[in-house]
Amino acid sequence: MNRSGIDNEVIQEYCDEAPSLGILALDRCLETNADERGQQIRATGLGHRFHAAPWLFRDLNFRLVPGEIVGICGPSGSGKSTLLSLIAGFEHPVSGSVERRDIGRVRWVFQNPHGVPRRTAIDHVTQPLLGQGMGRVEAESQALAIMEDFHLTGVCARDFRELSGGEAQRLMLARAVASKPDLLLVDEPTAQLDQSTAADVDHTLSGIAQSDCIVAIATHDPNTRAACTRIIDLSLHHVSL
Image (cartoon, rainbow, N blue to C red):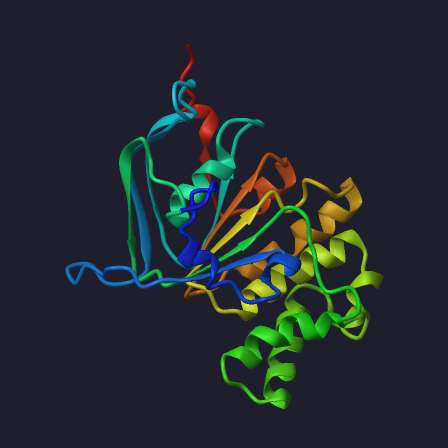
């Protein structure tokens, strides 16, 4: 276990370029309850704080299922990123529980998009498809279809270093979708972008709503919140001293 609370064995499962590409890759086998089929994550009486610090939130109850985009909202310091970590299983809650069913592959898209500077945009999306055993022609065809959902076909031949901030962030989302995760976590996708560029990202968020993937987005941006299909508002579960 390292200082971030993630097992060293998990870190070894990252692909070589995952840190530079801004996507955390995790493949794990988790138990499935035969009494209730289908992918889902269920939180019951969830609460968390760090050591003797005040509670970030308490008594959270929710269920996440594929096909929707769930926004985790609240002011800075309310525990949005912490809740993402609890959902993924990277941290253990102080109170309550998180149950994961049929969740094997997790992808995390961070605030700051980092790619390989001299690699083209389409290569970033093609790579995970090649890793799934596809041939180059099929992988590039699927990559283009995914990039179209994120309004990126016009820049597919550009190197990553030539992309704008909004284009780079949308590319990280497209790459995450191409990896076909069971759970996709997105942390403040517009936090480092200006208003106009952030709007470009918000307009394409529907492209990550997949029928076989659970999606959760941490944000305090009202426009990103509006692009989500459901909201978990941590300000309603904050514990005042």
